[in-house]
Length: 432
Image (cartoon, rainbow, N blue to C red; front, side, top):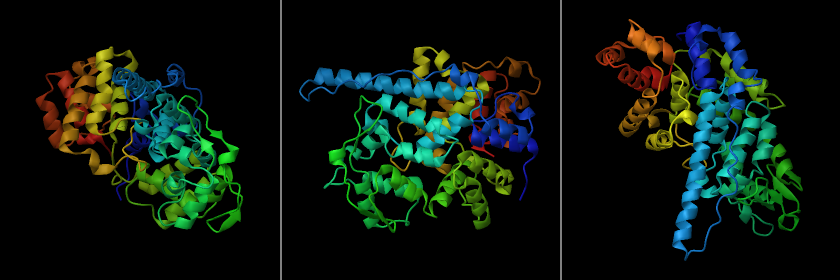
């Protein structure tokens, strides 16, 4: 194992618990940086980018009124674009990016898509709930999510009623959110669905409602336990299973450390840190203390949103400050890369690793990097004698490979081209 230098380990902290370093961030030590990222406090940048009030989505007109239908679709798309651009702006503006980074993680974990929810206001309400609990207790987060209106609409909660349960939410809650594959039976799914009956959501209301006459009050048999389980007691039952803590720890490990699962002794330490309180912050602290976190071999390909948010932060470009035409190109560019906030492809979330390194993704990344570089303040790079080193300093890259340095040398006469090539180089696209 080749252990990272402290500066490289600090960069990794910013990459994995944030969206990459800003200029000056690598001057702090590892312990100070970790404390700053995990012991979050008031954040002026976040406070300066309040969540927009989108209001209820437009009413869906009758099938015969094509003009009204087109107008409603246009309004809904405008609200969705506003939500996406606001979150990108928040990711860029926040002083300490760990809260937004973990909110992004939980968005992928409890993957919910606006395409079916059709209410950007509900997507933002879910987003705020995930932010509120991003580094807190997974118990609290799971209890909120199981009755979250957007998730209920996404996983057919409105169709789940006594006498005719819909199993979608119950199945995904156990398989994808809390336990993993193979740790429940089909009988458990059917009985868990009964426990979740009665919860309904409306697209114009940001809280779900329990309708008593739709809820099954009978005795249920779930995961070897018997009782009159309802939503919250079902969550407590599932999280109390011995498989749950290793599953949650493993999902964070997969996205923040390595695609290779943690060894048994490592997993035991992570579960111990997570504890009975299911403390996400303590789990993250334990993850960053593991030797694998400091191993130069545990590299991860940045997801497109992580790459873009990091680039915006490094270059000091705020989406909210761009003109409307330029701003609109950001979600379009992410669409070309295959990842747009609030639009995961399925309840399983987004891909990882080499899936983001296709030829078409490379072209989309290049165009997006050109757009950001065109609005970046690159004066310090332009004045530097070692321009490759200067752009690396701005991006938090300590060293370029010979191949990358040669590519940078070929465009050193145009500082914006230099920034574009650097932003698309493996040393920046991959979190080493």
